[in-house]
Image 1 (tube, helix red, strand yellow):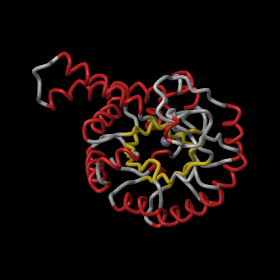
Image 2: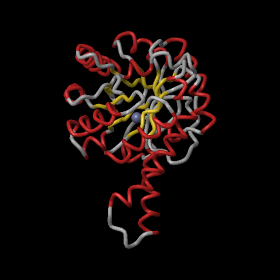
Image 3: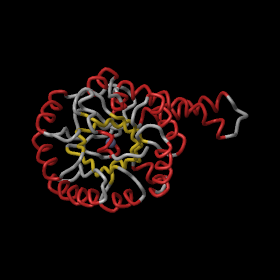
Image 4: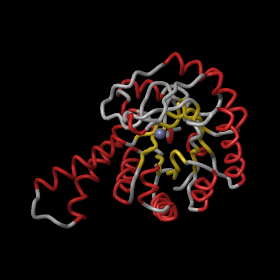
Length: 282
Ligand SMILES: [Zn+2]
């Protein structure tokens, strides 16, 4: 069933769980992620990042993921990840997305707040929740020129109160696109943010988080955990070995079966580490 981010995250913190938001790039990984969620009996978020957005128009991904969500036996939210402004947010909402992220984290605080407020006003008028980012989660690839900055707890409080966002992405030590699980998590900073901010918190770059840290973080007020690279590695590496093992196979349906299974298993693993299945338990 299709739900909004707010509906999905209701009560999740009290159940010591978090919902994973997986970056997906089309039918194969989206279907595999939903199959994982159905097996684990957990809600799940399908997220469209900037790479996916350049690859497929929002109208197409929105229609595809909505249709998959409506057929699913578990709650599914369709999320725009790292939206760049008002127009993209509006286009995503018109395309059927049920959650919007606006990322103004590279802008001065006032500008980030002003833009976020405008998007919140528009999205809320359509019944759609908004996530924004304070501090900045960087990238493991320095050539992308994204400035990383850990979240200042006092700034996070002001930002959340002034903008009316429904979820807040915070920088507490993770980096996007890490291939190793080695991110140093700043638990002290997270505790300070938790004391000051009341909306659910969001962790980005979570492929780089160790399994025991994922378990610990699920029990905090972090309600949404973004994971992209782990599934892309599962898909790509399995596809490469399938092609090498079956040099005469040219049918994409046959070649994609193994990678889809690998994505499903990786997604299930992350869901269980995050206690995402607690969300649907009484
Ligand atoms: Zn991110």
